[in-house]
Length: 47
Image 1: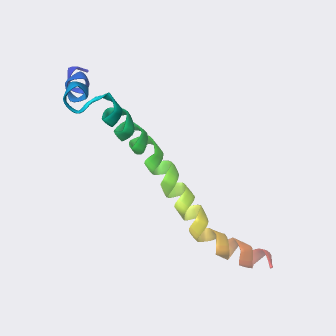
Image 2: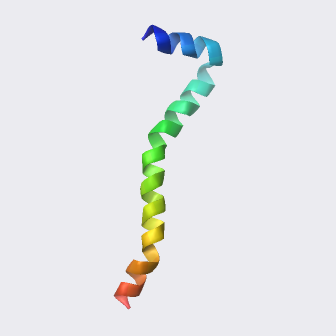
């Protein structure tokens, strides 16, 4: 816990929050990209 507080004091709270949100969103973005890439195949399968 002290490491996190030290990191926050060194780089600033907004940067830490941004890094945390990017880390959390990364897996969701990968799923969205995969869905978009599969979309043409799914649309062709319905036709």
